[in-house]
Image (tube, rainbow, N blue to C red; front, side, top):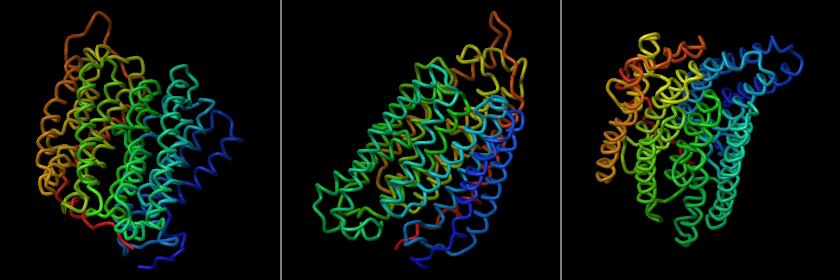
Length: 474
């Protein structure tokens, strides 16, 4: 391990994203509108190259680079892979809605920059880099929320920005406090400093930083933006903001509490456990009463954040915590993108009832939607089922059996609102004709994601051991 390694080759996946974003922005300024697809092709090539570079890097020893500010280890590799696959999925499902649009290049470039920020969040091993990654994972997505310049989109972008600005300032204050009482910004040094710091000051700083990261995750109390932004933006944008920053934020949370916060100095496991319990319960209860599909998926993603936070709560207390988090996050990302791909294929079907009779005219898409929705519940043999099973096991191993029981109750309760969508899909056709898909690319993305959700679930026994190596420490 070399803490001063400044070899840019260690950051190839990140550099591919950044390079494609810069070159794509320049290309978009010169290409005619009907040839903007070249920018999308460049972005897809960068994501694929990043996946190859991630696979190669995963076979090398873990290392800390650029003054130990950035970790290249198992959690970072997993974050890279999940985010890049999500980028490919969103690029595909958005083809029908954005091709020929006057802001097509901006959509692709903002997606890449926000995804770069999410990856940096997952690998950040320094408080200052954490703040920089938070901003990079926020500002492009603020702009993306208002990308279509519609009334609802503009309102969503404003709410997203104001929520992020408030919690971002709180996070900055928390970073200043933690670095002040810890005497450093690197996670390892901060951990040593906090062990001898006043508990009250360290606790306030930690809560403030958690507030900012919970904004990225969509967890309580940083969840207020999720329903309005998800419901007020196009399906492709909604898929992005409920998937990509969530992955980076969760890994950043896990690395922060396990590498920078002494377990014996603060009762942070109980704090995160309570946040997880409130988040999953609020998300599931609020989803019961939703009638629009994107708003239902918005509250669903809040509930999923609660389940994923369980793994963060038992960091350092259960051996399965890290593989559970990374595997569950991967399964959720694929399944969530698949659900939004179906929504994108039917842009005029905004409510649950608008999907009535869909199975009679498009049975394959109805099956794909059902697989994704049952996957979000955690139905075998999907990836989310395996992820939930391992997360619940980790909770019990980590001394939070009560949290595992509450999570099981919430899982059973979630069946109700997912079935409220599935039932009309396979029900009798209403007064109007059942919808027909308007996007071939979105439909194809839904098929691929549904297949991945099942296939990845079947490979759980192979993948989970690969995710067990703990974060590298300095």
